Image (cartoon, rainbow, N blue to C red; front, side, top):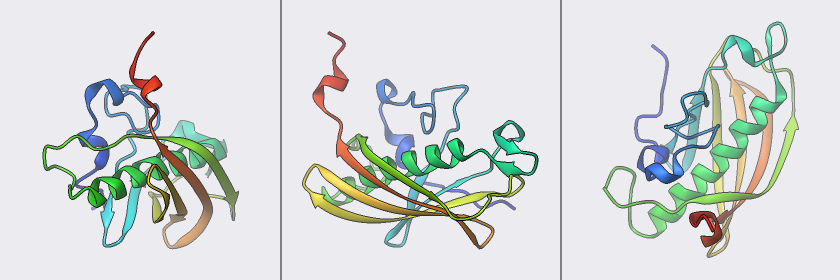
Length: 161
């Protein structure tokens, strides 16, 4: 049985903000990354599809970058939501984040035929800015690591002027 994230922050995003190609549950063509807690770390599990190849048998690096990016913003949302006294599924809308910076290091080729597990460690660096360090594993092999600095979504993103 494949492991999965049962309570994901993306499940609580309002419909207006659930369209991201990486993590938006309403984007029919997207990846549908789901990020939740595992102890004090965050976790996203995703199995690449056959079209996500770089060369046969290995995952395209852009997918890995997208996974780290969405895992980072989802992790920041989880952390601030918890800091505010809330948890996933409690009916309170979580904060939304956007990426201020993304750094990715490819450690070794990532196989395309296994679930990828992104594990995040969160550090608050400002009330509206969080840093998430992420490691991506295929089985128990570290394939990539990255850093996301995520900021609370600016109000300009919520209006269509």
